[in-house]
Length: 477
Image (cartoon, rainbow, N blue to C red; front, side, top):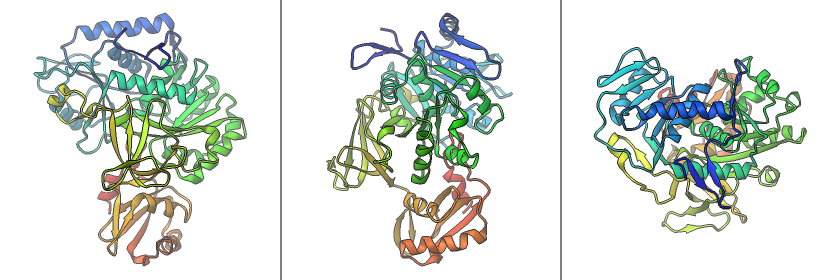
């Protein structure tokens, strides 16, 4: 069995690159599949064999070449980190200093970090091997917080990546007939998962680098008969503003959503839009620490389970932990959501020495999210353990505040804690629009309006993975 193979519940082998997988460059129409794709991957494997031993940093733009580099590293059994190619030079230098990669592949800054030699336009190699030898199970490293702050890396094993890939193929019913488009960056865990699942199922991935609002994006969906589109909440907000109509795209039959809570109003809206053409919307819940998807709400149960993110993916199990440390699956009991499964990370890494560590989680992920299960084991997320603010001494869940504020009027919202108040940023709103909404929010919470502030912003700041950049909002308080 190769380094990139596991066995599913039925005993059949699953690999990250199915023989029938296809990549299509939307800009040129060029296709890479079958023997030429395997040859390109094998050439990448051979190239990695000539490099200094150790972890590979793959700066990963949305290109066919970047996918080949990634699959080649995975096939070669080299631990790899998928990185935003737009990382500032100082952030990349910090990563290099802390984690001592054997090489940095992909677009490079003009300056060369001390201790590395530039081999060509796409490769920066370490002069001497790192003193740390990565753990043999380590496969993939992903940053925890986009390109801001001082993020840790999530350590994912080969088995975790492949287990989650298998689970999602089963949960979504992905087949070789499916065609996905690169609506998310591959260095983001959700985007990586979309890529992995479609390549492993023998499906097609259309590589469109310009993004959702580019002129080239929607024609590519029509031209290449894209069947599925994966989006995060901010992109659904964008689609609504664009007046998305699935009837314009006859091949598009599946929408998937993860990467944060999508407003129930939009879940219902897009479910109904897709239902009019016989399509489906899958709501999911994930964390990078779980490679990355934990639950999937079956599309045919969405209407009756509105607000849920579904049951655990195949092979996983959910419980709720109470303040006294006990765990339960009883319906309606709110506590920290715990997940157990083969896709859970090995642990975090903050320095090169951490890369040598083995599995520290034992298949258990403490999500940090508050939630409850229903009588069928379907999960409902109620907020974050640490996402709280105080108004007049009253502790308030900021995720709940966002839900309530969203119900007072249009526009995407984000809430942060201020000094004994909560500040709610509303996309596209004016001061005149917000005055009555502040009063309505305060009335719903039975607190004085002066404990809340609403500010209109042209657009909420987003991280490169499409999630709200709360740090930027906190600095603007």
